Amino acid sequence: MTFQPIWPWWVMLPVLVSVVVFTSWTAVRAGARNGLRSSLLPAGLVALLLLAALRPGVSGGSVRTAAADLNVFFVVDTTSSIAAEDYGNGSPRLDGVRKDIMAIAGELAGARFSLITFDSQAVVRMPLTTDASALETLTAVLEPQVTVYSTGSSVTVARTVLNERLKAARDSHPERARIVYYLGDGEQTSGRAPEPMRVDAALVNGGAVLGYGTAQGGRMKEKANYSSAAGTDYIQDRSGGNAGDAVSRIDETALQEIAAQLGVPYVHRASGDSVDPMMQAARPGALKETSESLEGRVELYWAPALAAFVLALWESLKVLRQLRQLKPSKEEVRV
Image (cartoon, helix red, strand yellow):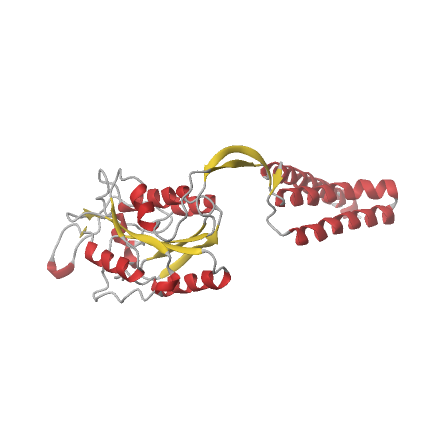
C-alpha cells in the first residue's frame, strides 16, 4: 500500500499528534473509563478523516508515461459558434473539442493541466493540477455561451489571461516546459480585426492550434441558460436584413495566424482523426517521448471517508436523541 497525502507530512504529523494528545487529556479529565468512551467516537472520526487525507492506494493497472515536468494549458473557444453542427455526422464542434482534450491528457499522464475558456471574456476554469479526473469533469460540462449574451467576441481575447498563467508557471517552476493547446474555429464576431495574441515566445515551449469546423459551415442551436441543454431552435441570422438560420464557418486563416503568433503549428481536426497529429505537432523541442509504462494505482481514500461519514451520522443521531430528551413534557409545561 502507498500513500499520497493531500497535505505535506509536516502538516499531517502535528495534526495527528494533536488528536492523540487531546484524546488522552479528555480521558484523564473525565476519568479513564468514561472519558475514553466519550472521546472514542470523535477521535475515531478525526482519525478516519486523516487517513482519507493520506490518500491510501494499492497498485493496479498501468498508465502511459510522458514527460512529467510539463505544464499544459488548454485555451478553449466557448462562443456560440463552437456549437455549429459540422463536426462528424452533424455533431457540434464542442464534441470534438472535448474528445481531443481528453485524448491529449491521456497521452501526457503525469503532466499538469490548466483549462482556460473564452467567449466575450476569458476565464480560468481550472488552475494547473495533476488531477486528470478534475479535467475530465470540467471538460464534460463545457457548454457554449448563452445565446442572449453572445454580442460578439474576439478569437484572441484570452491573450492576457494566458500570458498571466504562463508567466506564473514560469516563475514558480522554470524547469517545466509550458505547452499551449488552443482549440477553436477562428470565427471573429466582434466586428473588428482581432488583436495579436502578444504572448512572449519564451513562455511557450510547444503545443498546437487545433481548428474545428468546415468551410461549408454549420447551424448553431440556441442555448437559453447555462443549466439547460441546447434548445431545438437555431440561432437566426439577422444581419443585413437576412433571415434564416445563422451559419458558422471555420476561419483557418485566423487560426494559422494565432498559431504563428504562439510559435506552434496549426492542425485541423475532424471526426475520426487520430491523436498522433496533435502530439507530433507539439513534440519538437518540448516533449520527451518514452515507450515505458508505469504501474497504475487504485485509490482507497473513499473507504475511510465513507466510514467517517457513517460515524458522523451516528453522532448526529445521538445528539438529536439527547436534544429530544431535554424537551420538557406537557406536565412540566403546565406547572
